[in-house]
Image (tube, rainbow, N blue to C red; front, side, top):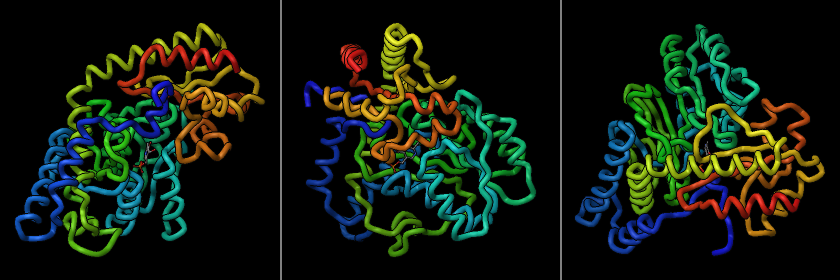
Length: 374
Ligand code: PLP
């Protein structure tokens, strides 16, 4: 894989060596079941609870407000279903550019329950129209606002304080998908005033198959997966403590190196933008206030090149994507870009280039060189 270039870090990130070591240690020696009362079980339980406390400390929350899940998608399902069955939510206010973990879950819940889904207006650059959010969220029925902190396709950053204050003013619950911001931006769950949030380890150099839900303690929740009493009775199934320690180690290192990574990756992204603009002056860089890790660009190529673009780059060993990994094989235009780009620009080839601390300027040069040959 050495000559290959990986620029799809919004889809997933490589595991850090320290994370693998920590997981291997637990896999090798801590095989007890955290629900067992003997010493092996107690040792495993201790690891699990220490992991939970650490997540809470890193993200400024209480350990009792965190439960482990298999993924952020599971977390979104858990929160949205609970909002209906335990909190009496009748109206969901969201945007058409959320991840399918939220959008498809809401659509499925609408088939099952008598709920309404309302979509906020978007600006031409893919940001949220906050006046529209304010109007939509003023209503008499119990409502929940579901908006993501950082968009996984455009990288646009939500004005989270503004959304939280609109929600508080109008008496709405606020669920924020923080999958693309946790480990990359400073996150204080208390200060941000969100009621619910989700995170996923594989987006910040941790293992796949583990995530977590944050929920404010004053909300009553019931399990979506039934069985034993694990995770305070909210998620049955024996906990994978190697997954929990992997998540925590990855989060710990990400938090420690957050400023260093922001500076390094920001420069890399700036370099990539400069190279794109100087080689393809008519390209369009999407977004207004985007995160350092994600760059979405519409290329001034003929629409006939759309279908072959990713394939041609892949043949040269360069992994990038057009949008979220879950839909990148589908060939359909991204639901995110379709929500705010003009029809003409939707037909043009676009690329989501997403960076990590492991990328280099030489890799950007390889990408630009490959694009010049298309
Ligand atoms: N939300 C966002 C913004 C994402 O980018 C992703 C992953 O692509 C998810 C949710 C789903 O995360 P997971 O892979 O843990 O289910």
